[in-house]
Image 1 (tube, chains in turn orange, green):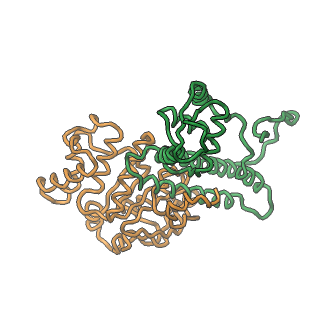
Image 2: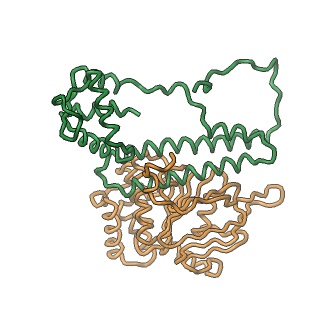
Image 3: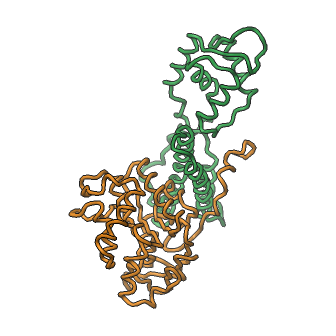
Length: 240
Length: 193
């Protein structure tokens, strides 16, 4: 199933002489269960692509479909509901609410969506448990390490029945071992059926993805071939 | 590659047979560097000749022949572990050469050349990462060996990113002629092989 589809998406900020083309006719499809990384330098349009895919912004031209439904055809409320129910976001700086515990942060999007506090709490605890954070549930963000905060943010992004996981430099300032743990979790969420898009300029993070798309000046210029099996690396006869 | 010293390291834990050494070498390095039995025995013979290991008796090297490290071997191993390999003189890197040369070739878009290499680098990194992902948590040797490859390839991709950006800037900004006579310093870095 195609969870996310961008068809000829362009985004222009400003007008006339100050016009900036952030995206130019971008086509991108992500299947359920697939993790795609979008790589490119600063200013290549990576973050714009993510906010448009997550319906936080509208494209200037082109279409965005989530779960087969065109965002432009939905009402404002319909899009807000989709953001609460179907899409999870992970940002570089975690964006956890300081006055709420880890469990409350994870339960919040469900409660905002009208789910009872009790049911939301159960789902939140399950998500935290899967990420090995059960004993951190009652802690506040400032009582957690950077790696733990980002794992809570991932729990919040996958809680409930979400289809699409969008992450912007999700391992931001974490050291390489914590960064790897974050990417492992994102990849596992995708294995379990979510479609994932991770934007990053870091090749080590991008290499967790099933497919890497290269963005440059708002255009998709290239992408990696479907990954060959790891065994091909270990053939003694292979030319290396 | 330091097979000789890797075998000394394994023997520092206690006496071992040749076949056992091979298996332990491979599992310790995550089976990323395959080693054939012949290589193990020739290396052991050389170590024995140099007095760094001794064997049970004078019979031919076979699966039943045990080896142990000597005091000289232990000294050699300790010195080797602390000696940094020579990283001071970079080899002529073929990839660097291609990109430097592509900059001036008519009809060639150097950014396209860079992207071809970048894609290949990232594809290799994906394969290594998938290998690490499939590995069990206790396979530390494998994770270490894969990390070494990932960091090496990552530095290649980062250099390509930097080269890409630097050449874009050079192409868009007008060249300013340097004041004074041209610099005639012959740079010594990178000319050794």
